[in-house]
Image 1 (cartoon, rainbow, N blue to C red):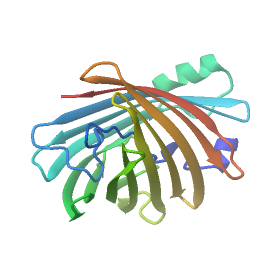
Image 2 (cartoon, rainbow, N blue to C red):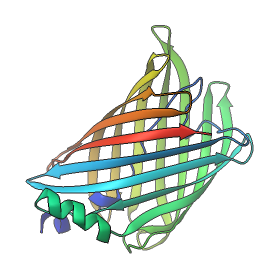
Image 3 (cartoon, rainbow, N blue to C red):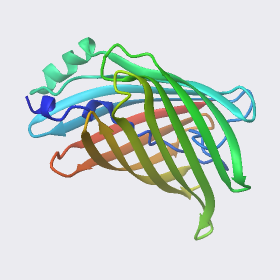
Image 4 (cartoon, one colour):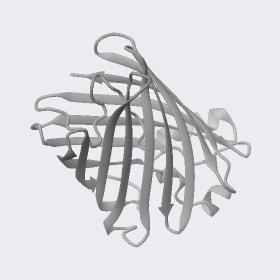
Length: 238
């Protein structure tokens, strides 16, 4: 089956969701702040060569202090199947993947934050690392008098099933369209068990209220494997 020839596509670490209210809601290199939390949930649909798969993803952050953030990421994703009905029913049988993490923040310069992160896998599938290291670097600036940001990130496995070949890097650029709307684009490269996948994602977010925001994203892989996807999500901060 084609999906077996492209191992690792289901494990892409894109991590692309960022919102500004002066600082990003999904913090990355930016510190969350003591006692502040953020939750993101989304449904994802991918299509490739007449096949489909769906997933639901959830991301949680909580600031233990101004320099320390903890959280979790969970995802349940189907294998590639033919037919929308079978894709939906397959989600009930899909294995749960994700990790818990601890993140420490610092500053290279006043507008250039960084963070280092330790991730502990909580996955049912063997195609994962039990222990990973990640790093994030950010930059705040202005584009046409609008708040803007750039972000670099990467991670690699250091213990577990894929400690010899699971890495990813990503770059992101975004800005505030209006006081209640954001737009950003990202490029990511992942290598899992020797398979390299490149993906471009364009995303937007719009405030529904002071606490909730709606997100929409469109993604496309580059190279021999051509995959297109949509995601719809909801953010809340507390």
